[in-house]
Length: 97
Image (cartoon, rainbow, N blue to C red):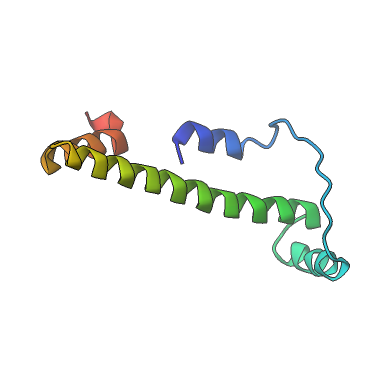
């Protein structure tokens, strides 16, 4: 995940919207039990954390798949491994270039 996007995600004062979702009662009860054990003030922040964690995993996976597809496409077009490696390093470590 990009640094700026991560900073925005960590901002506790970012805009929120209400969402209605149907969850089985026993799951909500379990969330209510687990939330304080994990240091959450309630089950809703815990749900947001679970959703955020899963979302970050999926976003990272899709971003990696896109990068892999791009690298393969560049190789098919004759771009050398050295040039691709240099470009990837430049993107991964922009301050050092």
